[in-house]
Amino acid sequence: MECFQRVFVGNGRSLVWPNARCARYLSQESNIEKHKPKTGILLLNMGGPQTVNDVPDYLLRIMTDRNLIQLPMQRFLGPYIAKKRTAEVQKKYEEIGGGSPILKWTQKQGNGLVERLDTASPSTAPHKYYVAFRYANPLTDETMRQIEKDQLDHLVVFSQYPQFSCATSGSSFDAIYHYFRKRQVPANMKWTVIDRWPTHSLLCQCIADRIKTELNFFPVEEQKDVVLLFSAHSLPLKAVKRGDSYPYEVGATVQAVMETMKYSNPYAITWQSKVGPVPWLEPATEDAIKGFHKRGLKNFILVPIAFTNEHIETLHELDIEYGKDLVKELGGKITIRRAAAPNDHKLFLDCLADIVETAVKADERVTNKFLSRCPKCTNRSCQPYKSFFAKVCQK
Ligand SMILES: C=CC1=C(C)c2cc3[nH]c(cc4nc(cc5[nH]c(cc1n2)c(C)c5CCC(=O)O)C(CCC(=O)O)=C4C)c(C)c3C=C
Ligand SMILES: [Fe+2]
Ligand SMILES: [Fe+2]
Image (cartoon, rainbow, N blue to C red; front, side):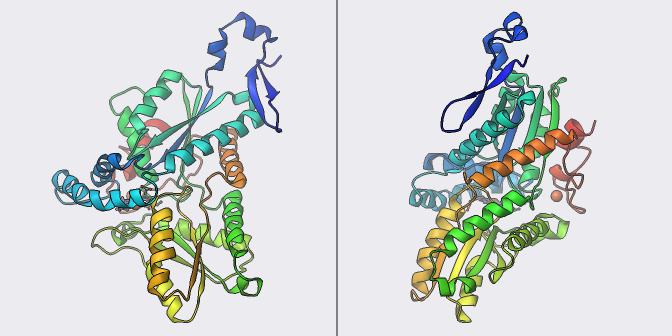
C-alpha cells in the first residue's frame, strides 16, 4: 500500500497526502515525519528588493559580485557605485509600486510546480520548492541552511534563467559552492542540476501565446505587420569575447519561438538595460524602436525573452520608458505594446514541471553536458577545479 495518496480537494485540484491506512505509515514515523519533503526543487534567481529600503543592500551585492561585474579595486569602487546609483534605482522602484514582484511570481511558480509534481510523481513526493536569490532575500545561504535542516533525499537545483550566462546562473551556482566551501555536502542527498533550458517547447509555446494575446489588440488587417522586438538584458562585449554562451542561447530561444509561430511576423533581437560606460551587446531596444520608426514602421510588441517574471526592466524600462515616454517623444504616431513575462501562465508552470520531471527521470547529476565554461573566462563560476560542479556534482 502506498504511504501517500492523492486527495481531491475540489476544482479538479488534488494534493498528495499521507495515507492513514498505510501500515508502514502508521507503524513507523510520526505524521509530521511523513510530511517531511523528500524532493526539494531549489529555484535560483537574482531576486529584487522587496521595498525601496532594500535597494542599497541589493545594489551592494550586485556591485561586489565578481561573477557579474569586474571592477578595478572592486572592494572600494563597488560600494561607491552602489551608493551613487541608489537614489535613481529607488525612484524607479517607487514608480512601479515600491518593490520588485520577482518573489511573488517565484512563489506562484513554486506552488504550481510542486502541485504538478506531487500529482505526476507520487514516488518522489512530497515535493517542496525553495527560493535562493543572489542579491535579495531569501538569500542563498539562508535557504541552503533550511535545505540541510530538511534532510532531503534529493535536491534539484533549477536555474530560473532559461539561457545560461556565467554572470547570472553561473553566479548563483557559485553562491552554492561558496556556502559549502567550508562545510560538508550532505552525504545522503542526491543532486540534480538544471542549468539551462532555452528551447523547451512549452516555454516557446507560452511566449508565443503571450505574443498572440498582444497581437489581438491591433486591427486585424495590421496584425501580420506588427514588429516583434525580442528584448533581452544586454551583456558587456567583454563577457561575449570570453565566450559566454548567453547571446547564442537567447538567439536559440527566439528562433524556437518564431518556429512555433511559423514566422508569422517580422522580428528582431534587441538588447536592453546596459549599465556603465563599457560597450555592451547592441542594438539597444530603444535605438531599434527609433530606427524602425524612422523607416516608417509603427506597430511594435516588445517581448521579454531572458527573464521569466515581471521585474523592474519590464515594468519600468519597457512599459514606462519606451511604452509611454518614447511614444510621446516620437509624437504619438507609434503603438508599442508589451507581451507579459511567462509569470504564472499555465503552459509555463507545465514547462517547469516537465523540466524537473524529465531531469529526475534521467537520473544524471547535471542535465546538460555542455556545462558552460567560457573558453577564456576567469570568473570563479567558470573555473572547474573551484566550482560548485566540481565539488558537488562531479565527484
Ligand atoms: C537575465 C539576464 C541578465 C543578464 C545576462 C545580466 C547581466 C548583467 N547585469 C549587470 C548589471 C546589473 N543588472 C541589474 C539588474 C538586473 N539584471 C537582470 C538580468 C540580467 N543581468 C535583471 C532581471 C535585473 C533587474 C532585477 C530587478 O531588480 O527587478 C542591475 C541593477 C539595476 C541598476 O543598477 O540599474 C545591474 C547593475 C551586468 C554587469 C551584467 C553582465 C555581466
Ligand atoms: Fe543585469
Ligand atoms: Fe564564464
